[in-house]
Length: 157
Image 1 (spheres, rainbow, N blue to C red):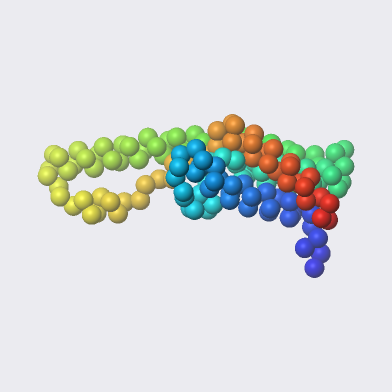
Image 2: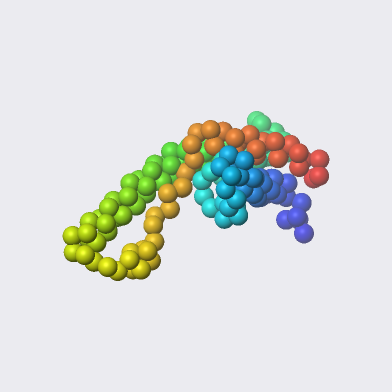
């Protein structure tokens, strides 16, 4: 039962869920596209990775103090996750865009050159996930989301 009173754990989990769910109305406001799948996908505004680690670090700071070793570990962990979300994962997503376009171009070339008429097989090929990482602004607002959620949840624990 102690698990249910673990404030840092719940702050991070609530931050993840909130950040994932809020992507749906945000996307709708910007593009007029309603996509429930955003709640289960990577990338987008705000970053749920950033929200989770910011909520975790903030809640650890509130409980243990900002001079504690545990807070220092949590902060460094958060910085690495946020850097990765906006760096390595974002670059992998951009590479996926290029690779998907190359695959489409190659398939088009084969269809035209050999008059290959197996469109159903071409459509079955799975594309690489392009929305892997985050733009720096998405990471920033994910972090802000996590800090706010941690402070809002603190009185409940």
